[in-house]
Length: 319
Image 1 (tube, rainbow, N blue to C red):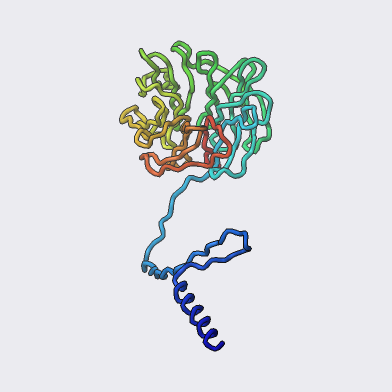
Image 2: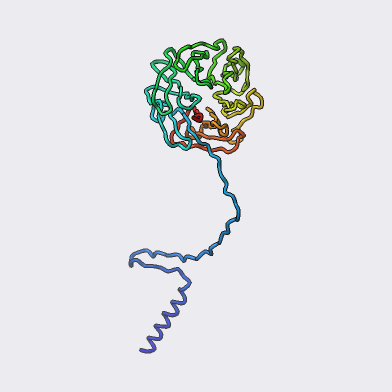
């Protein structure tokens, strides 16, 4: 019997030495499939020494509020939100299609095209959504506020008209050109730019001297310019051109593309009040998105896209 015990102990010892380098197997029940628990090997810890005197990188991101058109609720309305997507307000909040918002110079009101009955009219509303007022009764689209805040230029038929901010005193300032549209006041209040199909093969951006009534071709010919916006200091003009975003000097020279090398298109541009950013709409593979970049084409920044589709961007002037 003593020999038998020694043999048994010897057998267990040999089995233990043989299996010490193998993975452990846990049997849950006679009919169960064995579950293998892998051997976990410890990884040495690497100590990272911080760089002494390093300065954190800061990113200058856009700020402020932006107005836009969206049919997120099934009916196109004018909305205002912070650049980060917060504090969304439906400021038009009416039945009928609303579009083309433009800020008053002091940033307290918005004028926009409001569909009423069977045609578009011009409406005005406070930035917080109160005081909605229709100021025209015989048609009007694409309003733009004068820099001194006393007049609004707008499209009526194929002409461009001026009126007081209460809708009174309407008068045509140009009617003889072909399909004038999208009037935009220059920051100094001396000119109104617009597009017209006077160039063979496409439209161009024209400038109207309000004092003299003289019209001249500013630029953008051959690039099918769409919507556009002046820089706050009046030295640059950004506009959509052949599905890209283009920039030129205020006199029409030096036209370049801002988005060609970025692989995205661009439309509905608007400048930040400090002139450091240009926001615009780009059509992605699935929906419209809002981007912002700096006037030199760098710093591309995508804004929150919770409220797409977007149209007709307008950055609020600093109140």
